[in-house]
Amino acid sequence: MAAFTCRECGNSLEEEFRFCPVCGAAHEALGKETQAGISAFEEGEYEEALKLFKSVAEKQPFSAFALRDVGHAAFHLQDFNTALEYYDKALKIHPNLLDVHFNVGLIHMKRGHVTDAMFSFMETLHLTHPLTPGSYYLGLFHTKETLTFQCRLNLGMLFRQRGELEKALEQYQLVLDASPRNVLAMGSLGDCLIALERYDEAIKVYKRALKILPEGEEKLSVQNDLGICYFKKGDLEKAIAEFKAVLKKNPDHVNAIYNLGQVYYHEGLTGRMKDDYEEFVKSSKNAASILFALSKSMVSVAAAGKNRPSGETALIGDSLPMRRIQDLIKRAAASDATVLILGENGTGKELAARSIHQQSGRHDMPFVALACSALSESLLESELFGHEKGSFTGAIGQKIGKFEAANQGSVFLDEIGEISLATQVKLLRVLQEREFERVGGTQTVKVDIRVIAATNRDLKRAIQEGKFREDLFYRLNVIVIEMPPLRDREGDLPLLVKFFLDRLKANRATRFENISPEALKVMQRYRWPGNVRELENVVERIVTLNDDVVIKPEHLPEELTGAPALSPGENVVLLPKAGVLESVEKDMILRVLRESHFNKKQAASRLGISRPTLYQKIRKYGLGVD
Image 1: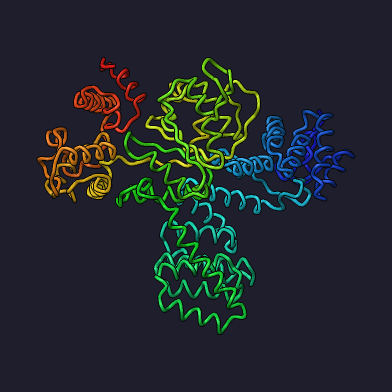
Image 2 (image 1 turned 180 degrees about the vertical axis):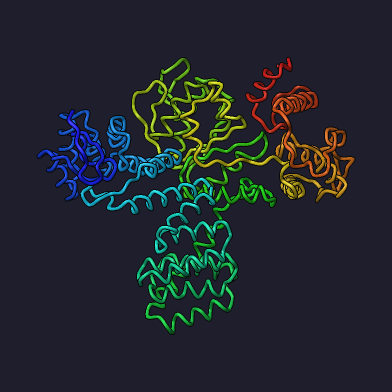
């Protein structure tokens, strides 16, 4: 194949290249069909462009550029499966097509595949080269800077989605270092600073953006964000002033109306609100519209409180680890990205999952939970995907699976690390495409679901041992929430005890009100291998077996009073090895079984686990009591 030198940068080229991969200069004469496809593409006639580009690709199956063109047309038609198919073929031939990497990142981003999207944008940044007016990218980019900035802005958004705010800040700051007047980066930077409660820094960023922006909706949006920052900082006067300034310029600004209504509501509908109403009446031609919208806003804010986590889904605790968890849950709830919740048994993984669902836009749709380890492989598939009549012995009718039952809502897959490799393959497809077939069926079922998974296993070790698929791990590992063990939650123990006592008091006759300082000291010295679930069982046992007003040391079970004490400050030290945890769990299960006279139903209830899980652990530890 003949080779020649690029007229722009001197790079050695082959004839098949349409543009120089170093400087982007175009140099290949385009065929008639390709030129017609480009014209159709530039006119927005993407279906015609796709047809023409496919025709070229059939004749030139080894041309990365012909394959890429098909991908671009399919991308603009939002046929992302076709786009990915052709992009993949193009990259296998020519891996340095930066526009292809960028679009692949956008597709993954749209589908919620955060890790894959981040990889594609990082790859795009790695390949970025000086673009020239002669370069041919179907109108996607004009300069190196526009491409670089967009990659970094997208990366910042993805880091924020994962809760890695410091890394997001770094990306936005890199954009601002190169382009100090980039308002989009400023706004994103301000949002991150608010989330980190660095309000003074956020205020400076927003004020700088306001000086740069011309009058218009974008400037009003930034001014509204400034008001939010003042509100969160606690400076209500300045917050009200900013929201009112927005409304004077645009009386129909929905966000400013809602935010001002939120301030009024949380202020308790005081006389100050009445004064502000009168000011609107005097100064605005649209006073009636504003007042009506504000009234609706306050009703909306009040109703929103009903969607906050209830006592059944609330995570009790004010320790630093729990505040971080609660913040992560809020951020996770704002997106539809897959969530992986890690943590020891009894740390509240399902509570966290329910809290995410309850605070999300899907809160009024189904929340469907399934403990994956409690079922055999065949039963698990039937529970997840459903089955058709006659698909196996006992399938006397069609059954709707958990995924289908949760359509428009959320699915919580507990103990995800226990499922078989065969089921993992099928689950991977659900995560990628949101579609599946029922067991024994041929019809594809499509669903719109949010998947939340949980495990107490080390999935990376399971991957090394060949027990868990790496591709499934990366599909799950989008937003990761690691629940802290109770021993790391300094200060939360008395709050939890009081919460459990109040709940028990509401459900049954008991005089217990609180815990004595002496009993609390004993509890704080205990390691709590069963975490919050174990604490709940201990409190319930005390209330059931005793009649008193305050929990005292003599009410505490033997495992607490006779347990080796933690050294000062040792409440944040993890147990050294998994084998120690297993030993403690084995002893606890055996003790509860004996106390329950080997009644499996009662023992499972006291341990806070299902009966199938109890049977599994009995077999695991060879207790010989089943």
